[in-house]
Image 1 (cartoon, rainbow, N blue to C red):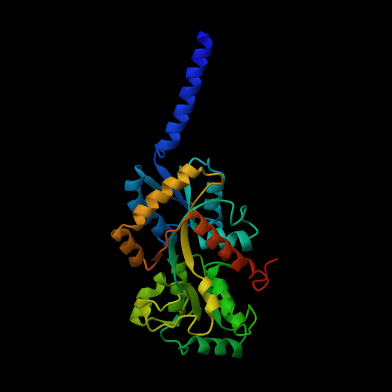
Image 2 (image 1 turned 180 degrees about the vertical axis):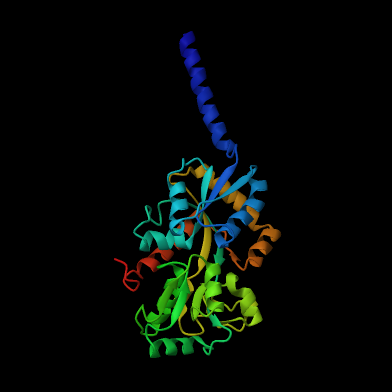
Length: 323
């Protein structure tokens, strides 16, 4: 009888400890892996989140940059991490929508991770040098049509959003995907230099990188991907205004993902934390200063958005020559 009582006490104690552990999350610092290098939109989004979320989480948040292979290396690290909530992913369109659909090197699918929430949206802009003779998107299209394969554009990859945006423009204009010559660079900063130095004629990318040049006249904006004009560059028309509303799907975004099988308790905890972050006027202001749009969502909303993004890039395979 004494043995039975002892076993019963141990069983109750074990269950109690398990429940307490689940309720106590997090009991140690949380690491958010950024699958890109320091200084970019992904890194800024992660560090801003960490700054404001840790006081509501009750633990410090460590940001770890693990760049490589267009975001695949860092994403893979989270994919195989223990699903305990202590290793999370700063998800990006390039690593979580483009790579799974267009890069054969990706070892995961768009829905391989646990969706926690959206964080931010990053508008895209197409632009030329301020000294260019091209003043409108229509003029750019006309010039591409007149000299197919001659004009060059800068990209940050071979099949990412910086490529999909111009290819969709070409497709809308009845031009082939290779109507202009793509020149890949390692990062956004290099594309800035390529336009300034005249190595490329145009670029389509997240507009935060180019805002200073757009304001100073160093660059000339041709179109933005947002539904409404951006206040910072109010003279640049939207894609919808120019009759190409399908370009609105091409934008940068950040989200928070976890490894597969992340417990509901962890997701719920982060939902509580992010609701508090989303009420913080300082965080909201900081996101806007980064020239992004706050976009806190439910896991279900983030899943639906991620699926629509993946389908967008999957549909571009043939245009991009990817088998």
